[in-house]
Every structure is written in C-alpha cells, then in structure tokens.
Length: 288
Image 1 (cartoon, rainbow, N blue to C red):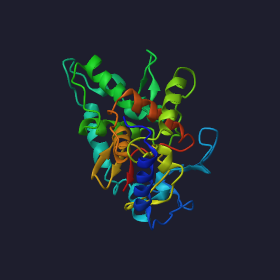
Image 2 (cartoon, rainbow, N blue to C red; image 1 turned 45 degrees about the horizontal axis):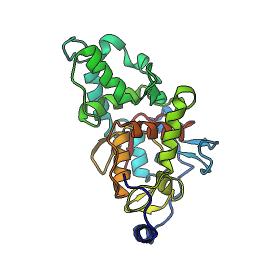
Image 3 (tube, one colour; image 1 turned 30 degrees about the horizontal axis):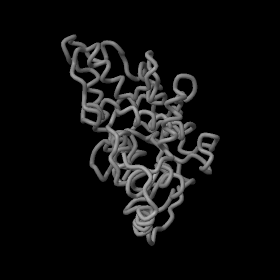
Image 4 (cartoon, rainbow, N blue to C red; image 1 turned 90 degrees about the vertical axis):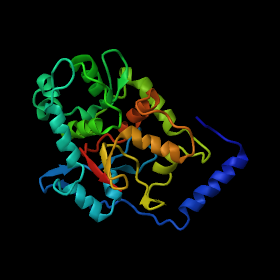
C-alpha cells in the first residue's frame, strides 16, 4: 500500500485534484427531500452529528445528494432496479444447496422475522471475537452448515442474498456495536479513514468530509454513508457491495488496494457504518 509521498509528489497530486475539481459547483444535500418508499415507509435520511463525526454538521444519506430522478427511482420499489436482485435473493433463500440438502429458510425460517435488524448491526463481532461482515456470516452458513461452496464476495449470488437480507432491516436505524470487543476494530477503521493513500495522497475524509458536495467528474461527493448498501449503481448497471466501493475509492487514489473481505476493509466498514448511526437502513438504494 502506498502511503505518504515526498513534497514534489504531493504538489503534483494537489494539482491533479485541483484539475479534477476545477469549475466544480457545490451541491448541498436537499434537506427538504423526504424519502418515503411507495408512499408508506419513511426512511430517516438526516441525523445529528456527535463525537463520532465531529467534522460533519449533521449526518446525511447519500440519497439527499442525488438528482430528483434518481431519488424518485429509489422511492418506488417498482422502478428500483435493485429489486431484481432482491427477488433473486429471495429465491436463493428458499433453494437447497450443498451436501446437507438444506436452504437458508430451513434453518432461519421466515427472513422477514429472523433477519430483521441483521443489516443494521453489520459488521458484528462473532462468537470467536472476530469482526465479520454479512458476507462472512453468509459464507459460514454455506460452508459449515449447508456443505456448499462459498460465494465470491461481490458475486451475483452474494450481492443478491445480501440485498435480500438488507431489505429485512429497511427502515431500522443503523446500530453497529463500536465498544467492547468491537473497539479495536473500530479504532483501526478510524485510522484508515484518515490515512492518505496512493499517488494522489487522498484519504476517505479528503472527499467525504473536506469536499462534500463538490463535483468529481460527473457526480457530487456525498458523506460516503453506507446505510444504503448494497446499492444499485447506475454506472455499473448492477449491485455494488460495500467492499467493492472501498476498492474503487482506494484505486482512484492510485494505490494498491486491499482485498474484498480483508481484515482492513472489515474494520473500515465498521467505522464508516458508525458514522451513519441515526440514519435508517435503506435496504437497497440507487446511486449514480
């Protein structure tokens, strides 16, 4: 991983960033917008700041930074393209797989009840004291209980399943644990968030704290909240996982990135999730 660079490289990086943002217009979040799914389920997209996010005026969902057409798409389950993945995940939930000949439903029964609140608490420290993301729990069930092969972290089956499970927490507040056994991981993630990486010498905070609302290429920078993940990205025409987005961000700093599912990304996921506490899980959001 590439870290701090000499002053000459830093100057060059600064010039690149300035060119990237030249002529950029600020786009403040639309605080008058109200996310109501199908006119029935209200999603909290604004929350007060606290000691976790002392450099933010308040917590804002990325939905508030999107254009009206994209916001409307997420507010209508019929129009939300991510619902195709949710439907696929629902089928996988009921499908037996592996040598045990069991499905997720055989053990966990109705997902609407058994998975309610799961996404809101992810990532979570497991019984062995290791921080796991939702994908770790899914693959552990597949390999240890079902006798099935593990799914690729950002593969179609995994993103469909995590989208389906996330839907069961839609409208519930983010509630990750950051104290007790989770504290060392949270601190590791916080350190990563403020560490500058790559040739461009950028940290997560460079974009999502210091430059919120600025235009970067064809999109406005949000606070980088992950309460809407997994998300359907219009750019990718598909579901994007949290760690996939982390990889993309670090890649854009022109640095060697960590692997999806790595200890580093799980720690970063915990810290970034905690920055969104008070916001609601959006289930499956739509982003540019």
